[in-house]
Image 1 (cartoon, one colour):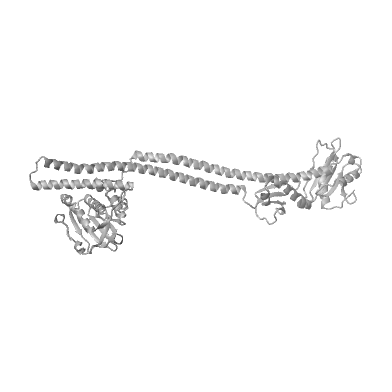
Image 2: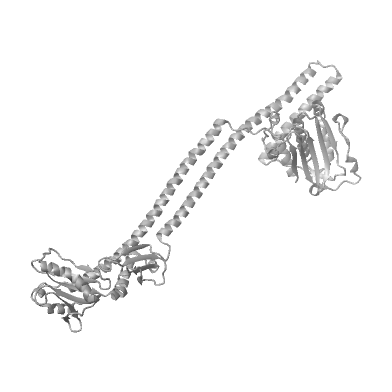
Length: 567
């Protein structure tokens, strides 16, 4: 209440601050959006790359399986056509014995020319001969697989190129065929083999899966990678970890043979996709945190700039108010001094009255200068206090007497209530405490409004000595009561900020009281006045009284009649 009003920033300054804030916030928001999009793309790209790597591994396994059967079929089933046209099928049996294929359950030939025309002969490895098989599901599958080639032979169809053919119409009997053509590009026979599914399951798959692992996974990762093979009914026919239960990350069908079976791959440890998603959350969190820190720094910088502008405005108001505070008493001193010097006042009563005015205004100047000096020392940390035993009641009476003329000139009536019981001597800095009390009186004088009464009360409250100054003036709102002790602060009430002041009074009061281990309290309501109380701890500041001191005589002593004092 006692200090100058905190000025509001000018509109153009506020706009400048908001523009600066927007200039930082908008690029930051754009940066966060771009980083979010980049992280999303990185997450997606990592997942795609990981799946591509797994798919490439399964492709490599499928290629190795195809290469295995291709190589075995070409090695064992590629025989000269003359053995068919010249009825030398016995040489085919000898060839089968010499170069037996791996993974074949049965070897057979079907001749479409010569004496064996139309016959399907099975190779018997025990005696290295051919024989006609009994009718069975396998024989039927072989017959169905070779019938189309026999039809082509009967029609005399010519084939420019011939490659290995696979027949899987009966999944229980999968067949690889090598059509044999003569020098006229006509089919003269078929050499084939029925695949051994158990050999494929127990030998080929584990071998080819193990061969492909080192090229795509590290040793530690390969142990955590699960590869499974499922048949057309989605039953697991092979797994590198039979205990694994879960879904595949990547699945791919086999090629060439067992094409209705599929390869599946899964991991028992975090995949790159999992790492990417985890890193995405971490990176996004870090980005948000850094953005928040940066935004906080910007807000603090803008707040500091705003506070600096406010402080600059408050300093300007401070200089203006102090100039006014100095100018008014100086003008009065000069006017009354000139009147006395020129001898225009002859009446002794008037001379005494003008002298009182000059003394009162000089005291005001002294108090203002003391406030400025004290504040300067407080700000620089050079303010010190010399504490000595002192009678607080006596200090209060002395301080009131210094306001005699000013109170009378302003038409104020002061009511003083002394302590009901004697207060012990306190270890104080007398001049500092009088200065603080004088600031409270000056504060009450300025803001009493139409009320022309001030009440001063000194009493004991438990372990505290309480010195209160009450006025019936404009009052202070509750949300402003803590701020009024800040330097240069001023409440928003119009009747308050019309009063000039240095803005340092209450700030100095609080500093002095806290330096003595006490505190300052305020009880105020707008339009009902204010009560400012200085509380000093008796236990901490009390000193032993001198012998013979009349403590009771200090209680309830009346003030001079001109102040309207009461016991």
